[in-house]
Image (tube, rainbow, N blue to C red):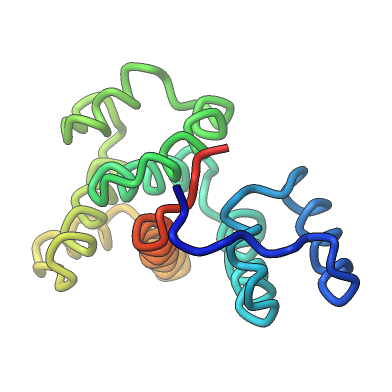
Length: 170
């Protein structure tokens, strides 16, 4: 059970933002119902996560693999469950998903393996070793590295918010 009450989504002051979230997300997930307790935070969150998920040039498969891995590392079941169908639709197979859960990246392409190691170090240690960064540098250009890093950082933010407040699963 969530530690904070969900916002009143019928509030006329937040109705335009509620409608925008529903348009952009095709629903109003509990995460956003919680964020709507602070409309400026909800709006900023929506803008940032829309940039990460819908405007980034990362291949959707890589983006979703990173999101799933962050969810696993942070034990954020809500985040994992929300992104599993998206990951499967983006071309992740069950074998790859199971590998991401177990920390076994052998079923992934070499660049994806480098990105997963980078994700692990960013999430667990914050600082990334030179050898790990060099592997990412070898596989990706500057734009992709920034987008990979921002995706990992963003979904660490998401999982920490979800778990601290204990947002309920849909």
